[in-house]
Length: 183
Image (cartoon, rainbow, N blue to C red; front, side, top):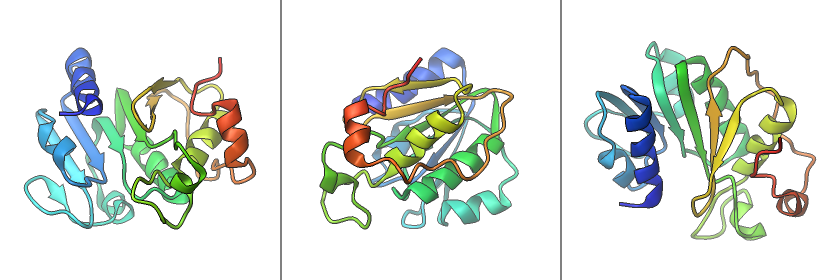
């Protein structure tokens, strides 16, 4: 089991979370390790128990459930991550959290869209940085795993589409350590 999975499991235990949504299952190892009362995985490439085999956009279009913890690790394109954040925010329970994986790419090639490397974070960082800049009153956190894990804590604020930052360069993001929360 990897450290990220252990971290997610610790959040569930510490906060007594009862419901979990995972967007983008990859090889499914993380999803399988999560033990919680209610869990749903969303991935058009995966199938199985408790898995919606559709895109996240399609899933959210018909979703009526709410969740305590949502882990976003789906399509690593900033515009998709932005939609996943907004949609997740709208079905997040009071006291809940959203986790966004892949906000700290190690190289320019790793963050290029479309994908051209085996290890790939895409430009998820653009959504994460834009969220920080455009919503400075949101309570955010950061957990340092291999590719960075951004944390959004539920609050009364509203999050709307249009926060992705397409103006900042990857070099500037790296120099500013844009994955870290500025206080």
